[in-house]
Image (cartoon, one colour):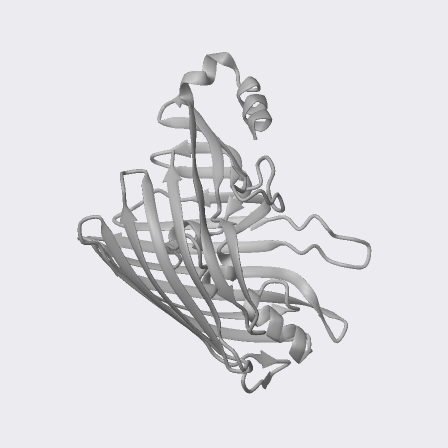
Length: 335
């Protein structure tokens, strides 16, 4: 990691060093889990540690050039998924009047604006999986905030067109509103030519809506999403396992989630409930393919940058004899 940091800093023009910000977080914990197979393990895990560099240059007339390079690393010694610029990284322009235009490896709108339902260090809310990540080869425009409203449009080039197949491009559109603590967001994602059904290229899609209140130490957020997937690559990890077992080509899923938290001094207790209904495979409802996820957690803030978290998560699967559960104690330090 030292070599990566040294190379990144050395590559920056010395005249621009004053405009460069180094940021990130180091997070990890110890956890005990039991899978659907009934096998238990104790492990030390990394909780999405990362380091980033970002900066800007004033071009005049309210316009700025902006850039960011963000990288993943793991404090537990595992290296899969790590490397330079593996997280959101881009170059672009920003204007207070005209908005922001970027290109690179960019967050989905849901990852930027709708992550309140997935705030924990250790356990991921299964609900966020389809659009809780980033899109490669992407161009994204974000509008200025206008009377509490915002909008974003992103296109991701599939770059895989051949003589016989179409490119698997992606569209991601988001609309949001925020006023006096009340928030509401909608996201549409279209995965073009995601797979074939009866020899014809078909598109996948996901609709997601989220609304609630987040102010005055109180957070209550509800969300719902419905998706159609061609193959199992974009469904969440739980549904992905089911899809592989069910067989078929076209799948439809629907899920809802609710999270509630309240901050009292340094303490923030939190409850999260997520439900996934039975999937449809090739238009036929599949019995016993739903799930329910329960999460209880409490955060303790040691300082503005350091936090401890204790959490318990349980997932009940309709087609499993055992539930899956995890107890974790983690620590996060931001810089």
